[in-house]
Image (cartoon, rainbow, N blue to C red; front, side, top):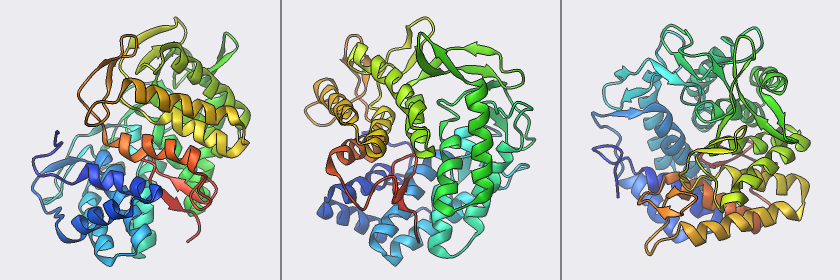
Length: 388
């Protein structure tokens, strides 16, 4: 067991809560709700990572309120949201990397775009539930501040200075460290019916299709390119990139969603799990770990939902079997050091409970009330109903 922070924020419990609700584990869920309502206290003099606690803690709390209508839970969520707001008090409105929960001090002027532009869903739902637009407005300003700084080709890089708005690098891609920024433009547009976000998404996906997508050995991949001229930088992908078929499916591009899922599924089946970092040009593993990631499963779920094709259900079943074979321990599940040897580490991320287990369950559960047409799933897979 490992705490991120000196004072625990209950991250694992809160992140796992919506999975308990989706699976019908009512007794366990009630215990977490009681802990949040009666015990949890965010008045701590400690710096937290704005992005990580937004998606895991704030996202989990607003989902908990949606499922329970418990005013004490909403009070906790709003208290937490207020403590995150000072992070957005930067030169650009893009949130700083660290914020102190008690003092509101901020640190960390350089963020990647996933960190800077992935709070629309959590802050937006807090605004919806409290009736106070300040949270959504801050999140939307941050996402559009990133989009407004795109290159002439319509591409953005990976890291930005939140005070000056200057790019810290020039590499554009759809993968890890940018991923949920794109995901949230589309999902924010859907969840809140927001025309500005919809336009930003449409402009973004057009640039991605033109400059980042690449056909190689009759497979579809998304490369890393220079944002100014579109020239290829490398063909490195991470298993986080496997979220993109789900986003393409939600966007309505089922053809490319299916093709990109095929690329990832082939990689998974080559090793029985997928490696963390891979060069699809040289077919070479650059980092061999598998950290119980959900993205490929999430995409199989979306494709199964939107196409009804059994092969996607079978994909998910295979992923489940492999995780059970290689990642299970006597007490829990663990990351894998090397997908070639299947040597186990001693570590499990909270997203395994929030996302990996939830998407596996949803593939087979056939919940009529929770699916990609009724809900928008946050990047931690917290489901939020689209209609108010």
